[in-house]
Image (tube, rainbow, N blue to C red; front, side, top):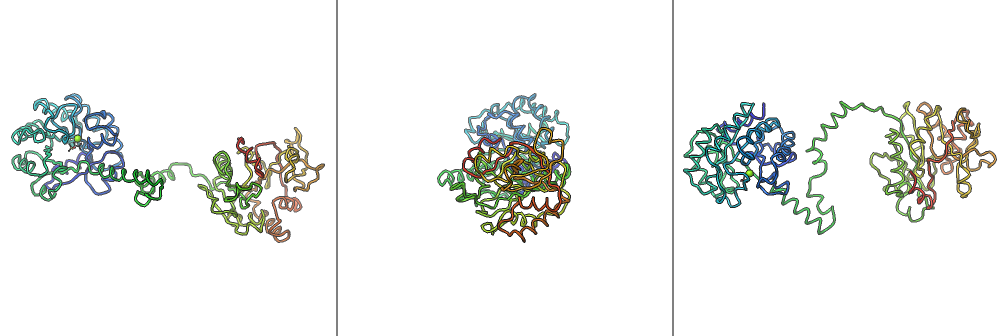
Length: 538
Ligand code: SPV
Ligand code: MG
């Protein structure tokens, strides 16, 4: 049913309905969810949420813009508090057209002068509109509407202005005559006497609407009995939110502890629910191309990295921060930028510190007495046998995304090798050197280069480069990888079996371990000076 028709039904039934104020998309949704059949888009509350006065300080297009969010956020009809119509009959015509375009069901205009002020601020001193001029505005609005069911509610301010019951009745009758679909009779008295008298004397010439803000003690049943069509709860969500926000702000300012308010505020999940996050998820599933399961990666991050001293007192090396983020987060970014989303880190030392959004983890609780291949074995137990590639790398090795492209070269096992191995050797540090079938040269990129041997003990004369701590295994070679890991753990032992030994095992078995030569684009973080250098790694 159209919102305009829904609103007409609220006006026309003999049963009193109550509608509640909203002032933005979120509060509109809350009103609807609570079960109200309609929304009062309160001028006071719209102004207040902008932080301005209810004196036409917010422009009518600013009001309109917020109404659009409210209308989109709800399925129940909205009655806009249109103040005085924001100008003369011509402004009123334009307002009605713009409201219809935004699926707003009805507008209420009050017989005061622009710019108006809230009726509860010095109400008696506010000049009323000329009756004929106001009737012309109602007629212009009715003339402008294209949906027959759009409603115009004429608000009588005579009682607020202290002009008496007769004046109120005279005006109300004139407005109905001009085409108003309902009369809102406003009163600032603490009891309902005035509006009850008005209702009795006015009769059934048009539905009568009230705003019982001031006479809040009168039971709604009294209004129902008296035959009012609609009661507007005009500002109660805004006022309740003010109390809640002030309390939270005060407590936080005093305690500086988020935990002191956490249990008294809406959980984020509730915010997401109200925003309709679920619908977006479903739409993504329908409309976005669904990525295949894709390549996966295992990052070995179980060791502490004692050489970094106090930096790893409470966290493993992989979680030491470089440029404001843990090393592991940089590694995760590099994988993600190459569309490798399924990344599992093997945790060990201070494992509770290893947690990043979207990162899977596997625990090696024996990290102190076991080595690389043992950690790899634990992670491989979680890796499915499917055709996509698997990357294996270290939690202390930074690399650029381009390195992942390099190792996408053909082959079941591919490793990147840095030809500038002497730089590291000059610093006297541990490195996995490699001897290969073809020495690096300007031409070597044309030929497939195979690994012959890997390890720290590859003699200097045989060295062709340093392995960069990353391996790509094709999905079809996962079985061989698993077999190698298992055999080496049995023969070499859980403590000493490492990836260099795995490469040698593969070569001995006759597998091709392809080497891709490159220089730079990676950084092995072993010592404090590496952490400093990593700050400029880009
Ligand atoms: C509003 O909610 O903005 C109203 C009702 O116009 S009242 O504040 O009572 O005037
Ligand atoms: Mg108002």
